[in-house]
Length: 489
Image (tube, rainbow, N blue to C red):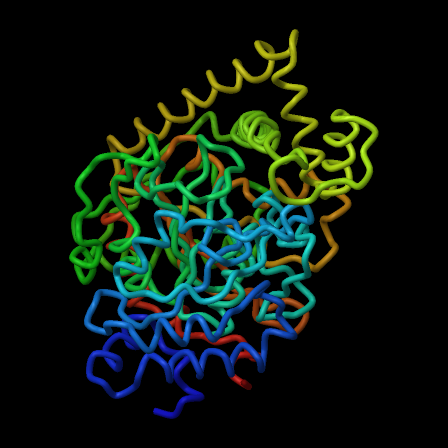
């Protein structure tokens, strides 16, 4: 295998070469750097690279560790000591992290090398990565389209073989939706399964860090490293962490999969509907029993999400005031002028919109009517899932109702942008786990656009959805497809 071929490898295949000493960790870094230099100017996945630092880590890496010598891209909302953590925002463009997030410490302990920070919607608020204040990221399958969001930089890098794997964050679908639109695997762990310490908060009761990878096995390998309790995060669950790779390789005999009738309604793109139908038939042929279930409060999930998430965002983003770190407005008249102009000049339009919405729903006279009522409906959504999981092992749905849309197509219509996450949001509200795997393509305007299949599991049941996703993945060839730009590099 030549150095040029290395970036196309999965993490599992790369591990074998490293452990056999057929390639060195330094050679891997060099090959990845060359790939990024060749194609990232067209895609715009990365915001920052420090190849020299990664090379030094590679020279000293222990390739016999679980992820020894494997470089991984990191969404630029996760703190890596000494590196920028801009959150895609002007307000943090000069900030450098002073510590490692817990997931970074765990990755380093497993031998992985944090390699580059990837683009995102500002403070993870978006579904297309068009809200970044730094640059635009394009979908490797069609450069005129979005890669999804908010973890679009991580998804695009992995899809284009400019990363072996990456970390993203998922507040309402921000790992799974870009994974679907970019043709890769994206796993949102259960709330509390992975520490959020060192993740810049958007909505603290919804955020979760997870992997974006080329295969289900690679996602399981990263989960083995990052899952588990953390005393620095009071929401991190103190539960045993299984070996997620141990559940892979089992068939679907005896598995019951629920098909929520509310998730296959009008408005879904015909290509998506056909691909999901084919995927359901495929899993049935593998031995799974398909059962229709109902999640009746699904129709309220978007409204509940945009009350809860914006309320939490308005509180979390209050810390960016121009006093302690980040952007600071020049020559303020007084402290109130400093606060106001710092935020006016530092935040983008979508972040301001959500802060205003969140402040409104928390304000006197509206708290009960909006926020409190939303939390009650959130409880009903959890109960819907609990009843469904009494009957089935996992739920099946599209990840996105449409394939990747054109750049600029939805920027002027926030409601249409918000609907891109219609199938992913409910899992965050309930705290469940979910995964998106490639399940087909839509032929649109001469381009093949990836389609994602979503599997949802109950809390802490990542092993089960990884097993089901792996069985489906290995029975198809969708995950082997490569975007033209990556194939030509």
